[in-house]
Amino acid sequence: MNSIHSSTAAVRIGHGREKPVLQGQPWIFSGAIEKWEGTPAVGAVTDVFAANGMWLARGLASPQSALAVRLYTWQRDQPLDDAFFAAAVARAVTARRALPGYGEGQDATTNSWRLVFSEADGLSGLIVDRYADTLAVQIGTAALAPFVPGIIAELRRLTGAQAARVTEAEDEIVRGGLAAGTFAALGDTPTAPVRIRENGLLFDVDLSGGQKTGYFLDQRENRRRVAAWARGRRMLSGYCYTGAFEVAAAAAGATDILAYDRSAAALAQAQAHHVLNNLSVPVTYERAEVPEALRKLRDAGRQFDLIVLDPPKFVLNRSQMEKGLRAYKDINLLAIKLLAPGGVLATFSCSGQVTPADFRMMLGWAAIDAHRPLQIVETLGQPPDHPVLAVFPDSEYLKGAICRVM
Image 1 (cartoon, rainbow, N blue to C red):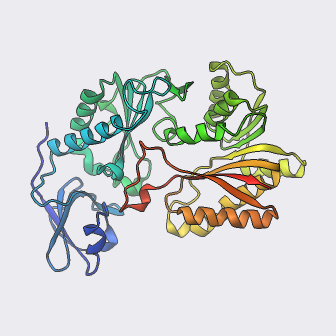
Image 2 (image 1 turned 90 degrees about the vertical axis):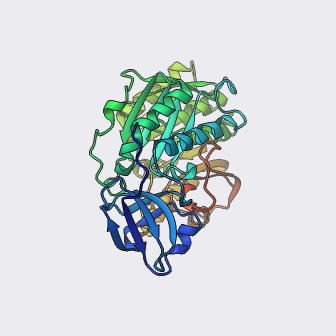
Image 3 (image 1 turned 180 degrees about the vertical axis):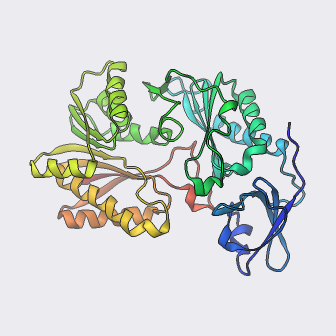
C-alpha cells in the first residue's frame, strides 16, 4: 500500500483568491496561482497558501491542468495517504446505505446507484457507480494515480463486487495528462453486458463502451416521475440513448412511442430493452440528428401528448453559454410546437454551467417564441445518490422540468 502523506509542493494564490478556498471550493485553477514552490509534479501532495502566507488547504497537484490543484482536506494536520482516501470512500458508501430505498437489501426493484460523486463526496476526480455486482470506476485526474489501487481495493472490500471497470475521464484538460489506459489493468471489465434492475425494469449495461460509466443512473428517479404522466399518451423522445425513458413510459401505459438518437448501437439496444421487459407498446427508434428530426415533424404537422428531451451537454464552459442556451431553446421551442393542447414536456439539461435559473429562463423564452403558454408543474434534478455540495454549485449539474402546454 502506498503511504504518501508529506507535502512535497506548495502554491501561493493571488491576493483576494483565498475566500472560495476557505468556503470549501475544491479546486485551485491555474490562473489563481501566483507561485509554485517545491516539486510540483503530477500527484504531488500540495499545500495551498494565501497571498499573506496563511495555510488554507491541502490537495494533489496537476500543474499542467486547468484544475491545477484538487483539494481534499482543510485540516492542516490531516495527511493525504491511502488511509485518508480509504476512509473517504467508506464514508461515501456508508452514506448511500443510509439513504431510504438505497443500498444492499433495501430495495428489490433497484440494484444500481452511485457510490462516490467526486467533489460532492470530498473526492474530487473520482466517480464510482455500482451496477448489480459490478463497479464502474472513473478517474478524472492523474493526480489520484498513487492512490487508485488502494481505493479500488477498499471499494471491493466494502461492496463485495465481483468485477470492476476502471476508466479515465475523457476531458484531457481536466485529467491533466493522464495516459489513456493507465488503470485498465486494475479492473476486470465484464465482456458481456451487466443486467441491472431500475424501478422494477431490466436493462443491459455495456461497461466496455457505454456513455458516462455505462448508463445514466442520474435519471433514475426522473424516469419514474415522467412515466407517471405516460398513460394513454403518444410519446416522442429525443436523445433517447438506450431507451430507458421509453421503456419506463411503455411500462406505465404510453400508447405509442417514436424516439431519436444519433447512435445506431444505442438504438438497437433500446429496442432490445423493450423485448427484455416484454413490452408490447408500438415503438419506433430512428437514427437522426434530433433538431433536424423535430423540424421535419413540425413541418409534417405531427402532434404528441408527451415529449422527452434529454440532450447531451450543450455548454461545456462559460464561453459557450450563449450558444448552448440557444441550442436548448431551439429544441424546446420545437417540442412545445409539437405538443397537442394539454401535452406534457419533460426536458433536461446536464450542463453544469447552466444554472436552474438559466434553465427556467430558457424555457420561458422558448414558450414565448412558440406562442404557447407553458406551465412548469414539476421541477426535477439529481437523485439522492448524486448529492449537491452546498458550497459547490457546479455539483448541481442536472436540471429538469415537467411542463404542461396550454
